[in-house]
Image (tube, rainbow, N blue to C red; front, side, top):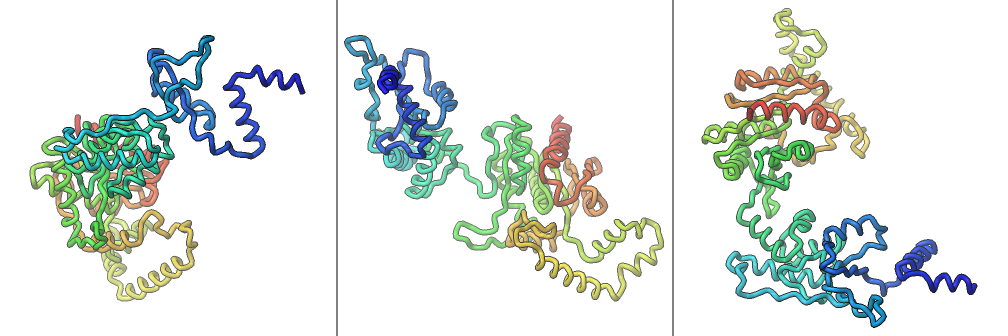
Length: 449
């Protein structure tokens, strides 16, 4: 026992802490509440920086990671030359200069936001002095406290910021500048996907998967998502007379953002129709996109078209093959009964489908309300001609319908890519990243060359 005591006495403080925590973990106990944080104090002249120290600390076990990094001119020493731990700075948070009431931020209207951010920082981190340029993480904050800070800030001010924006602007002044910039130029339908907005603007309509798949492939593109708005801020339904009516609002925002510069439009399924109408509207106002890419822009066809499609797939109906038989099959007076029985059968299958959305017949990617709204617009939509630069991407199953409905309405120079998949799988990974994204990039480069 005396030998064990002797060995424990010769352990360094770091080894004692590590041993103490390891014993607690093995016993299933948690550290006592008196241990609130770990503070790392370093000499400012040593060349170390908080960023470099955080990178090293990230490699340590979670219970050994410091939560605060404090720089000092020199570490305090005892009369015998040993480290004087009681004299270490930072046991009390450093006071920060208070916000100047006559600061230039008052002129930008950001002083109230800055004051709210300072109050939020103080509430989350404690009663230490917080100033306009106080860094949240240098004051002891971490990722979990950052989430609490964001929620508290939103509750007190009504302003919402993302965790990424908070990490890039971790000071009250930075948050105020960020929100001030957003308030000067805010859009209802457009949101940035890329962090850098200085590249070629590429607008992806209502497909976050495609937008985020393109982002890592092209650093020189500034990718924006274009979302549909079905309700306003007061949760009232927004009524659109047509697809053209919806597209006008988005076209106005894109024109305001891009000015006379080049940009690309990309849409799939219903959003491809909206992108098509946005391109037509912008062309009419002298702001034609460099390229419009339409991925599976399928319409909601009438029964006649679907019946023709079924016959075509079965190989029973070819061009120039017995036009009288074709007319008889399409205009058969018994057809209504056939369609009613088919609708009843489909309804029964949907009712019997599992509720977890595993059936192939369920629309797991669409909200029922949104699908109903888009369906109503698609039923009344008929595309017109567009002579601007464009590209068609279609799946093998729908190639016949896509060709019939769209190629005659587009420029003769429009390129068409037929991919070996179906309508539901064309924008799903891994097929999307391996097949669709390369086609999009290739066609964009050709158009911009």
